[in-house]
Image (cartoon, rainbow, N blue to C red):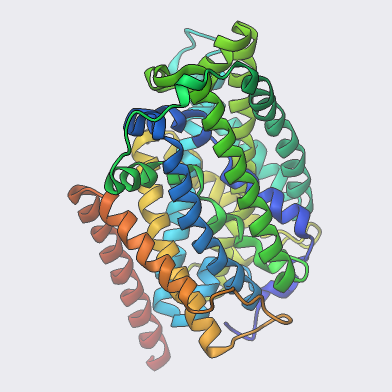
Length: 437
């Protein structure tokens, strides 16, 4: 990090509750409304196993993030952890992966959200979709432009709004469960469970982006670990309850609706009203995800600009709102542009691959930060199990990657990494040339 650090201009407004709400909102997005059908299609009545596998792997990852986040308090989250631990080159790679994950996921969710809204006005011309996308992104940019506190308040409100229909589905649906629908017909192989988990993990990802505003967190050494464990623990319990109830109500038929499986399950319980409530819940949930995304991800642009990887204009901080306002606006333009050109499935796969690579780097960073005993803001959180946790995280992520990624996807990811390394090399050459000139 550099001594001339614009982080000092940012305002530390995020406490445990606000950061936990941000992580939860980032995690509980569109995935849980769609993925239960995919899990049943792949694993049948043993579908909850995919969530258990995801919870174990993400649990290891979260412990790595918790310790790293308590040791490095600079804005940038995972990018800052990796750069501090293993150097600027890998920090640059991590920063690019964070931005790739965040922008691809946000654009994908924005794509689905806009189309969901347009189901209320069937037959709308194609240009209306573009207006909806730009309006959605523009609204969130305007909210977060006014400061992290304003954005966090919106996220807390949306968290409550998105939870109500999901909790209602669980608490009402549990009375309509048919025990026979939950009986296992077979025990799937570990490779099948992990292959399914590799897709379902999209519903668990998000902590990498939600920790980007690290420089605006109060007492990060305590706040980051508490918020991370609270949010991911709550999300895991919610997911398992939703899958259990949906499967108990619909059985194998849950796999027949790949678009709105939870809405179909709710419809079978209380009729069209239940289906409509879950569809509206999905819209609110996706909006909540985008709120957390637009609050967090521009801080990645800010951090990479701070460390001279991106143009200095991105470190500009608004004199009144104390927000990285130019980074927020530029990030909004990027997301809207990708949303108008991409498809949800392609964007989701790309986001998943980038996230797995990023988690691997952050596990290594957590190991190195502890070994070097780096601490920037108070006594750090010490993960139980010490170095065994990041090692276990790396091994489990490698296994998940092996079971999930196709050859074509692996080649595409390698191409992206090569481009990133070339860009870093060009930057290094340009800086050296400027110094010798």
